[in-house]
Image 1 (tube, rainbow, N blue to C red):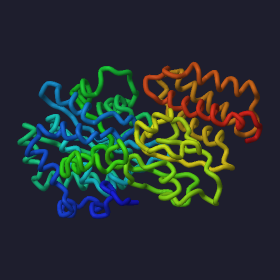
Image 2 (image 1 turned 45 degrees about the vertical axis):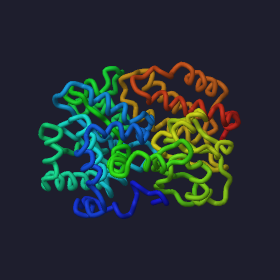
Image 3 (image 1 turned 120 degrees about the vertical axis):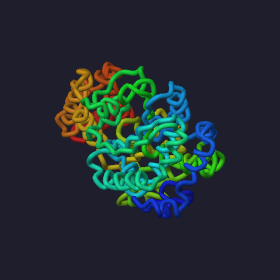
Image 4 (image 1 turned 90 degrees about the vertical axis):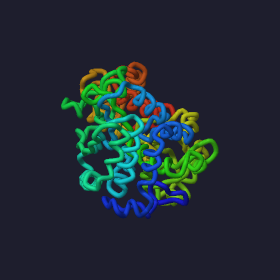
Length: 413
């Protein structure tokens, strides 16, 4: 649902795989400016303070600089559209309805780092998104618009769509690289980072779909324009996947820095059934829970981090009074247990054990020993995996234990 300052969800650009309609709506202007002054691309993103929208909020310009500074030769740009976490549904919309802004952003990235291959890595369950991207890629390839990109990059530029493994861990950067190299998507420890050794052991820039979608608009309108879209010290807009116990769940584009209160009670229409607000899982179910005392928090990376949580992907799963936190946490930890790739025994066994204990407690069969065991696992498991899956599972369990201890102490919650 578009907001007053809609950029990515502007109805005028929701044209699907229709390149003519995209260019008629102003598409292509950002790429044209990038081609005219490629040396200004990264400084413009730095001045705009564009952050990675896939979860970490890492400054985009730093990633691009690292890849650009690698020795010339074959390089890759990968658009990460694996999106598989519960409560997150922003990227699938962009891929289905605005594929050309994603492609244009990826091509600007290719110009910035001098990459000859652009890959759109998409969850296979997003069949409509894959189809739209394939049609859109064919339009760019057949249109001859890549000729000028190839001239500036200094090599042929190839666009392709690659279905991901469909696994949750398949969205982690090193797992993306392994899958594209033809192996099982096992995450690995870093360094080396993908910008050093990625697809086919070549420098690879991996960005989330939403991140790349912002790029053509910033190049077209300027860094100041983008910064001024945000509230307070935040820049730009953010896509929020709002779900759970709200009257009007959906996808909202709002200024970065919009308060949690406004998202839920103004745009989301308030709580379902008139029930009181209890908590929200921010950025998906792998972060610290926020409660009623946090409704004033501005939804930007730094402000949410100051409340010991993370903005993440912008997914907001709202929970009302009367809903068991333990049951919801049990559901999400079961997701993590099923999503573990199995290469790190503490992660595979730890998530399984936490899921088993949570199910016992949630169904009224838990004992004090079960609750102590759950707390003990939260102390020994962090940092024991090659990716952040186990840490995310522990975070949400530990947060719920600390914030809602009464639910763990009462049988049959």
